[in-house]
Image (cartoon, rainbow, N blue to C red; front, side):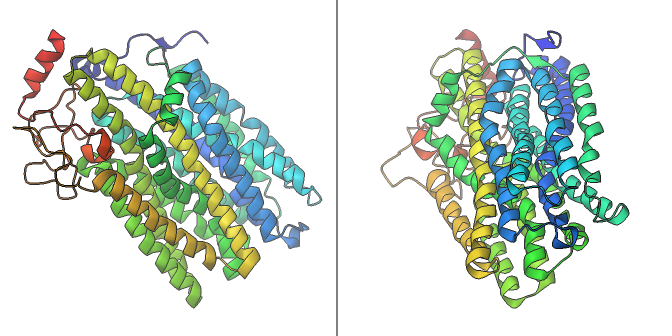
Length: 514
């Protein structure tokens, strides 16, 4: 597929963006959302199928076996994210979207056959579930691809919408599972995977006909090696373990928890499990918007604090045996993880955009600096997406161990509460804490760039310097785009010698002279 390649792509150029860039980028965004949505649904397929594998249908799977199945699906999806993120820059977004949709026909067909056979060995089910994990890799390739299409000032919205639309696949497969249970009955779960065959074919067809490959900004192995050495990449990855890892882990495990702790049937569990992933997916773009407005680090810190409170509520409800309170607490947890997914992912390109602005200020070529920022942020998105997805594995293994040791989910929920507290501390220490007095004194005429929680008396509403749409520093906080917030940049990477008084016009003139 040699057609569909774009050789010139400059989203930071206002004229290019208004003339043709916005239209092309949004077309690719919507098609990417659909393909990723279907891929996510296939990835989450086994979280519903295990609910139908009951003793009444002849299956002898224990709770340990079922949590192991969904853990394997989550693990493979996480491990494939890094190579998928690299592949989309090598082969192009259009080409890879077509391939990644068609390859999912294999696990869908296998699942439709195996769930009819109650005598299927566990190891065969594990292999089939592992193949479905390929759907999890679609997330990284889609996010890396869309990250390169949009300018910095719109990435929070675009990445949040792309990821939120994909995350809705978790709710979609659970709603379809409820539909199958209500129509075909619990004895015919094979109808569920069959429903995704036409969806996958449609996603591949639309991508082939309407998406584009970008020939610019190709990420190479060097970009990945640099990301792996970058402290910011690993810090955000840890936070993404807490946000997205919780979202996908809870999405896979929630139905099983309802079955084991409260004795719900497959239809009863499926009737409730979709609600949390649905609201969590819808809240993800809002998290990106809030990060655009207030800064990713601030929103992320408050989200983890709220997650800790939500986990405490779920633990109290489980202890009291209150089914309604337990479901309500978990729905709140899903919404909060969605907000955190959007705000945490916004923090990734913000750091590299700030680095590019510093390079331009130092006299480097603006286009080269922005291209390097796009390569670096693409690699960091793939790395953090892969690491974050491992959180889903941890969630399900924690539930599995909790049931083995205590017979219920309370020990696992208590562990999640403690981890959210760690994430609050990490976010504050790495992005929000003020430097010690005397360690980072602003130069004369410079504004405060410490990214403190209150922003300081001279800081804008984001608590630090923003990078303008043209890559240079903006003059007035009220008029500046919010995509490169300094609280989203590790404290050791912040510059304290950049004048705040330069207008956007003077910054652009300096770029033209350089």
